[in-house]
Length: 165
Image 1: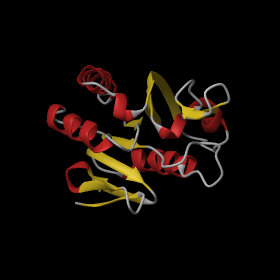
Image 2: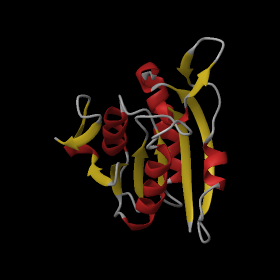
Image 3: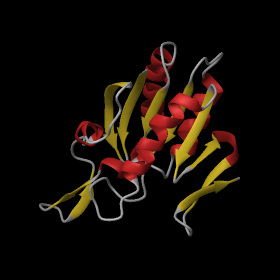
């Protein structure tokens, strides 16, 4: 099965920079983590769109995500890696602008970067790839062993998770 994976950055792909002493979006790590998964009948096609913290995303960035997803979702499900802070905002734009979906569009991310101890990134990525196979057409957030319609979810910063809205 073919699945498009569009990467935009966010905490999922942050790394620790020894030069700045901060966790930053510097390079994409998705390919390395995809290789660690057993996906025997899945063909994952990765499009590295940007590598930004979602708080730094602009309206133009979201329009670029929309333009890419609009093309790719005609062929196969789309999973988008995205920062959790504005994931719902991007998801709602996609839901508003994408019409007659035949496949699911899934946004996912992480509270802790891939490769860090207790990271939720690989779990969320794996669950999103599975969700691309089983969820109906629509725009979804898949994270922490749950799926949410993008219109009925919010990030609860205190609990560090997404909850129904």
